[in-house]
Length: 456
Image 1 (cartoon, rainbow, N blue to C red):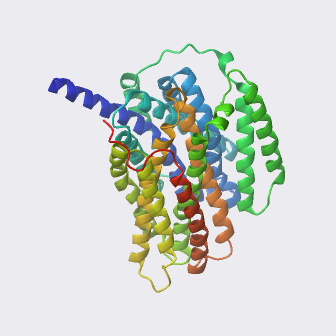
Image 2: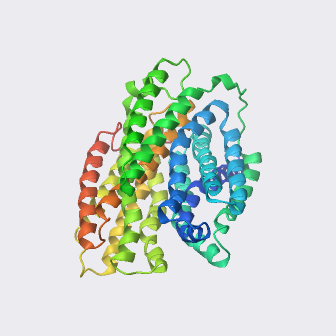
Image 3: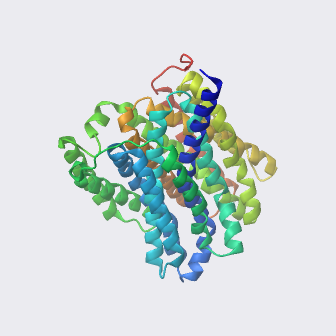
């Protein structure tokens, strides 16, 4: 192939990945920046902390319910069309939020922001899988860096702009990413002409799914609050049963439950990824609490130290992507879960007399595990999903992440509720160690060989 043509194709490939990356970073960026803005918003709207915390919960809730729905619509009506629609929704919500006259309007803006940004990941993954047939692992690694970096630096970015202006800045900061991604998407992303037929949309199935997943998340959130809403669990079970029976008989279902029941490999990945994120987010949310309450570190020092956890995931991601391209997903997945087991075990050796450097080493091991786990589990999923189902599968994959995060919040509420010290940190580590060993044995059952033939 001509050298000039090869260079042109590589340049377009990079622009293609960057365009999608700038869109997909909006969800983790906005889910993390809010953490430093809650106190200001609580004061401005005269809220209790429980009410203010819904600024975080509503984003997780809308994202968990919205990802599979938007992924399905992406599969049906074209990934580029949904990608541009998602950017438009985020822009509209980010423009309206700073002028919210009351708290319910602000919550609605956060929900719309979550739904819009939830459209970007599944539609982006669909285009990556369709148009990048070689080196998908490296492409996924780059997108993982976009997401991990935005999540890691979100609180720092938000804190800087809030200090310089006010909480409204965390919405305005989205616009540079939205504008660049939208302009590039118009010219770079390939269009797929699909005739939109509203009758094709399984509206009842979508409504039942949203109701079931939302009621389940509300139940989990009530466990953390201490006032358990059992009625939400009843609604969850009832709507889940109705959803399954309806989808099993529907000729064009929103979710092919018959396929998921017969081919359990895809479902297996979702369950495993939920477990991985349950463990990881216990540390992601738990370490800052421990550092501030047990070690008496301020917010700035805690934020810097947390880079050991998030930063190592960013560093490891490209290496994990290259390894996946060479040997497949199973070995990198085992390495990732193995590091999670080791890091959790090492946490039991951290005591009052241990230097902070030892905790940073442990956090680095746990961060490295996340770099392997995200990409290897995505690849394992796509190895068992047909290309035409990529959008919805990517959405369900992200829902698994949010379910793990919400479950971790409930576990933290139980273990760190009364007091935070080295003993309660060890209790959390013991519980996470049991989960991590269980997930490791699940990983051994992943399809595929440990050393598959190198990919071309």
